[in-house]
Length: 412
Ligand SMILES: Cc1ncc(COP(=O)(O)O)c(C=O)c1O
Image: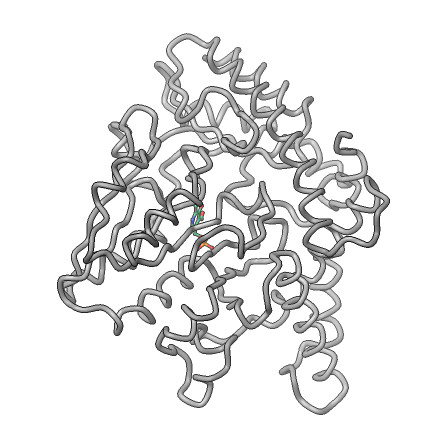
């Protein structure tokens, strides 16, 4: 079975409007388009229940119920309990708060391993802890491929390791890291594994308990939702973190790691994600007895198959173009590479190509995408120019990729 793209695209207002629909949009890793059900819930909240939720008057009760529906929906999708989720304003902020919450349990001489493959969100907040005597070690990428080698991690972990902070999938390299093997190594040393799922979550739906990590963070504005950062933790790990909320909220699971308080409407709208995935499920499958998580997994399996095909359409062309350096794996094998494809042209500046593509209604970007250490480690001389990144998701089409490929052939 293949993904019914006409149906998928009918769910997005942006594809129904002639001005916006003419764009081949490949900047999804920066922030994805939003389907009707999410927009409708956001609109409804702002129109009718834009009051402080959880009060006793009707609109406030309704606002609280709308938020609860979203907590439940995201928890069901990830196969977890809502109390294990914190909905903050972004993943960067969630990481920052998490680092503050973990700090009191660390002692001078304790070690934290970070990578140079990650987005800075999962590096900088940990590196700052060096001022408290925490030793920061760096798990470094191969400068040619951009990939992390598990053997190197084995050399770095030891009896002082407390945390290993890594990404499930780099927003530049695209390789899906072997999270289970990594977490096994981390746990064998007695440390916790902290995983950035931002570039992974738009492409795969995981059973979070099965992943093996202790803390998992991702951003819903890259998974077709509103601008929220979701942080999940294992119950026993969350319980040990020091509350960062108001003292009277320190026992409330959803508030203790969210000092800024929940963004009501943006959270409420996330229930629309469940409706969106359900609509896709019902279009493609018939068994309605499965859990929301199991239904979601089947939908994401269709996404993955479609995305791999598009990724290979682009990767094959890039390899034909003279002098182009593709970052990461040259072929998108199922489960091993997300359709986030970064490359460097042989002669022209990345920004020059990006501009020419934009003149033809093709949206991509260049730069370091806040994974600046990764870009530098790859040996790129000008990190601001960085690489060109094409990030595909399930609503992209073969025809759009053909337009991109033709454009690249003409320009490079
Ligand atoms: C891999 C990765 N991690 C973390 C982040 C930070 O997420 P947020 O913008 O929600 O802070 C991003 C954002 O681009 C990202 O791509």
